[in-house]
Amino acid sequence: MPMYEYHCEPCEHSFETLVRGSNDVPYCPKCKGTALVKQFSVPAAARGASVQAGPLPMAPQGGGCGAPWCGTGGCGMG
Image 1 (cartoon, rainbow, N blue to C red):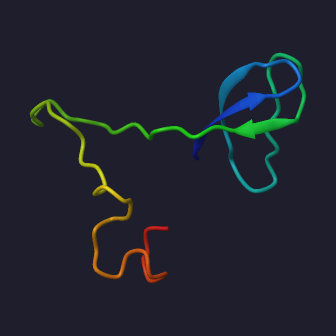
Image 2 (image 1 turned 120 degrees about the vertical axis):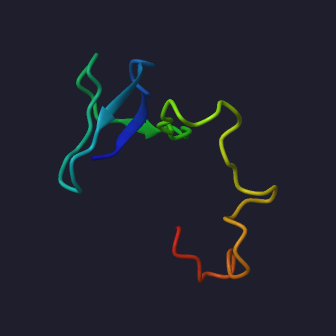
């Protein structure tokens, strides 16, 4: 179940919520409104104790996964 971040336009409240399926309509926990804007967020990554601390792997500058076909519509990551 994905966790999404939203911003409620009427009451200016930002929050996170689980979205269980396509029929699950998120609402603001403060005002119960549904006039929400989905926010861009960076996903979290779990790290075990055996993994050295350091930067997380990121896509190369310009976006994409770096595969030769990425950006041509053949990428299975999107």
